[in-house]
Length: 301
Length: 301
Image (cartoon, rainbow over all chains, first blue to last red):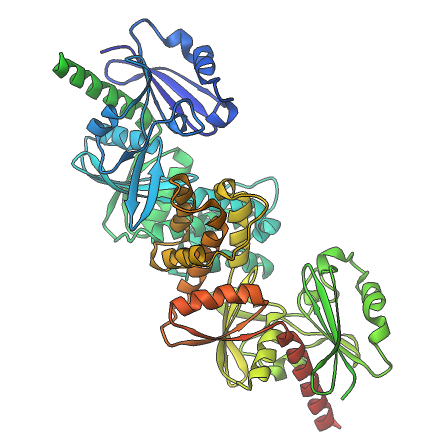
């Protein structure tokens, strides 16, 4: 196999890894150089300066994430679901043929409304490889969380939830922010978090339950320092409530450890069992794509 | 009856009216002098400078709204529900005995979580007087909308919804703001608003449906200028969905005409009939409270 360089080029950060034959990480770098920090036309120069030394004459570089968006290096049109490795590899957006390519995001349409992802598709396929699964339900928590269904190796359904963004809006800009002590306290108050999840699961909806963060503070029925955790529980609980899960369901959870720990706690409250995969899912996904490319190339010879 | 001056002293604005024997408005003034603009200790001076000329030797001034909050003129402790005129009048917070009083807000506790209102209780009782009703379900749209149930002249249940605030957060601070043209376009695109309401009523929940404002713009499936109306429909539709209404239900809608028109449209989409009352509800409520005071005083003589 060609020497492989994987890049996860998102909105606010850029991570890269040199990957070995079996997909193992040989070396990793990360930079605060998300696409929002790169001027149009400067992507090639930024890539060369940060990763140029890793590219040998026969290297392959695969890039996932927002680098393929309109504001990125090269627009990689969305690939419509259902989609698996075959669809992704045929729709790669090649910057330098055979050398550097961007993985397309996925789109889906449900009842006339489109939904999209960019980067998460690579994590999903990577996690499935790592877990040796070809069907699963997965959740990727974040600013815009994604809930994904995979059947026989292809993503058949997915749905976004603006959970992380709505948490930040309520935490920083709403009337609730006035009750929350600075500096930004963390979201690790377990009992307050679980209380928020419970409130969300049994309540009318977030527009109503969010107000309880204010009234509980007003009546001194919750410790001020615990409010961010309570609010976090409300928002994550609301996201989980929307999914129509049942006790006994199993989910694969992909993401950073701290955020995944919150989701795991909340999901366990509804009786859902969780298998966790970290951010290495991206590298596994890019490695698997490179393998698929190689197999296709061998067939075409 | 004593000459009556009514004040609606909110967070950002201050309105006052001289009211006649039958509650009719003789003269009205409004100022951008909400409680947030008044320094602690300065409320009496602001009142005197703006309304002092209306106070005669035997005048009564009743004030509703956030002037009774911790940051206001004088804290008027919440009155617990169920509550009617009798409870409100006995819990008035007197600034100058027999002359100037603040109407208490209401509190309620549902499943261990408090909810509160300040000012809306006066509008509710005013609207019921104007409509000659003593039982009704009412909605007061706004930054923090209130849904209120009244039975036999007493508020028995109410619930807040952070609809207006969440709309503003999503409109101004979220990723959706990037797709919305400046200057702030209005919320009067009827078809886009109704499309948003429909999406909210049939969708999984606001955390998911709000993302559709982004994807519809991304795929140019909605006119950019119509996005604020669509988002408004999503948020108001979500609020309505939480209430468990049925076709054939009847509601009293209290508030400013433009906002009420949006709610009326949305409520009609779920088959709910609406009776509308404007902001004169406050004056009617304060007048009715003054009458109750007078009756009580006469009894006590």
